Image (tube, helix red, strand yellow):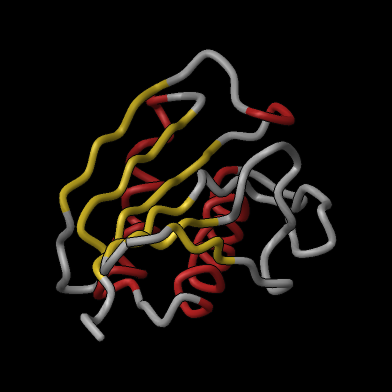
Amino acid sequence: MTLERISTDRAPAAIGPYSQAIKFGNLLFTSGQIPLNPEGQIVEGGIAEQTHQVFRNLKAVLEEAGATFESVIKATVFIKDMNQFAEVNEIYATYFGDHKPARSTVEVARLPKDVFVEIELIAALSVE
């Protein structure tokens, strides 16, 4: 099996030496997405606006690889303030609906570009 880099211009380009996602066999590993728009600018607003942008970015990366939120096996959520967990969780639920992947949520001292939230996913792809 080989590693395949996944890249889309519908999500922000990597801002370091990494890929938006890596496909390995029938698994997709996304890099953590922060609330940058595809042009690389931080979205204005608070935790709600930032969380929605993160999910728009993740959706674009998933779609580029032929996956959807229904394909997600595991999500890891990094938030700057655990007091905002309920709001992030409510938004998170709108993207996953009845699908309930495994998840970890961690409060961190600081995130890239001082954003409020970062999310990474592991998804299953169709076996070809």
